[in-house]
Length: 154
Image (cartoon, rainbow, N blue to C red; front, side):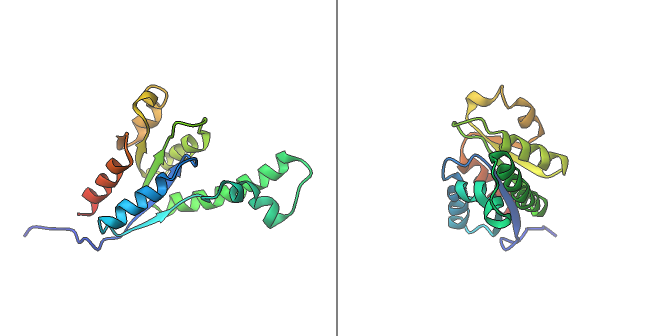
């Protein structure tokens, strides 16, 4: 008997990484266009809301350090919950800014033995060699990550 997984299988995927482009929307849209049944989890997509959630929920602070501290902890709860719920974690390193949060998320996912897909331009190969070594796949385009998700589900 030959086993063929259903295209109705649900996969849960956390989209971690850079926040300065619409890459998450591209991954979700391409997955939907291919009919992939995936539950996506993400960090707060609005940068200002992420930065201000501590003050909005728990009250203002005089010093930015404590404002950031509260927001970081609330965001950590969201991020950790999403990563823990996910079968696969996709981490994208973009071309702008240093992305410590993306590296941290990749490390957390790896520590939880999550399947990890990393996306970044080829010029980051050396700088991200340790992160890439923990990944099961390293892509240089968003569509390649979607190809992997489709392969897993079909």
